Amino acid sequence: MENSVLDCVIIGSGPAGYTAAIYASRADLKPVLYTGMELGGQLTTTTEVENFPGYPDGITGPEMMEDLKKQAERFGTKVIIDYITKVELSKEKGGIHKVYTSSEEIHAKTVIISTGASAKYLGLECEKKYQGGGVSACATCDGFFYKNKPVVVVGGGDTAAEEATYLAKLCSKVTMLVRKGEFRASKAMINRVENTPNIEVLFFHELKEIEGDGVVETVIAYDNRTNEETKITADGIFIAIGHKPNTDLFLGQLDADESGYLITEKGTSKTNIPGVFAAGDVQDKHYRQAITAAGSGCMAALDAERYLASLED
Image 1 (cartoon, rainbow, N blue to C red):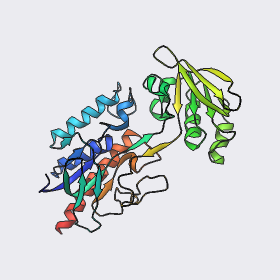
Image 2 (cartoon, one colour):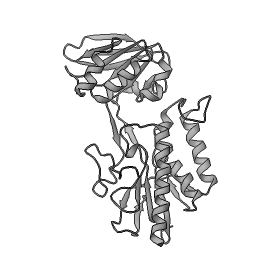
Image 3 (cartoon, one colour):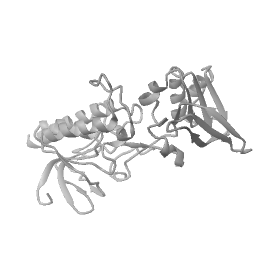
Image 4 (spheres, rainbow, N blue to C red):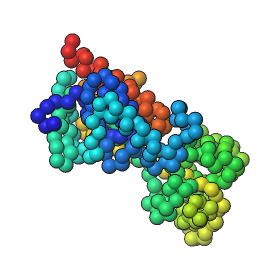
């Protein structure tokens, strides 16, 4: 592959990457997709996906990603299980972009970046233990499963306030654990929380432990001033301390916002470098849904196709 120049390289294998691959391969761009370390992205940690159109009975995240992979391969995408370690992006229109694995140098006319974002976790052992059994980082993905049940939200910023007010519409009670004595959220979001009767806020409280027989049943929080423990009955716990876009590889070459999300031209997937496109959560901190990621993957493939066509004009 080192000696030839590919039309399209896709970095990342979530809904955005695989959808880009489906469209790019149907356009005969013969894309090569590098999966990255987490095959299928964040959806592989989601047990049930019930809000993606076309699956009336729901589907598991890993099954959906396998379906998308098969569809991309059916049209000719080459899927390589490996990760990119370095990129050298050409600033010239029509320039050749270089991407590297630990053992290979790949040259391409277009690059689609769909490396996603990773939810931040506290790093506690109990989070891993109950992931898929009541621990989540996405209320819009998983809130429905806790209809009329009590849940806990960890965090004090806009993400936590937004998750809590969303969950309050579905759940019987929402308890927020806020590490400091005040919210970090905007005033508008704080007002929403304060005006929602079934949200209880425990300031100066942090998560200590989760208990339950295979699924979350009790959340143990502690007051970080006194170490006094509080047991909270809950069926789910949402860790809402933000996301980190997987963009370290590209910073310094591609424009990004203060949080590290890649900046794309409005209404397109175009980055500041010709022939380089970004799709999915890597450039979207507002929606972060599988369906919006898939849609932007389609956009990236179409943008790449049109860019390549413009080089022939």
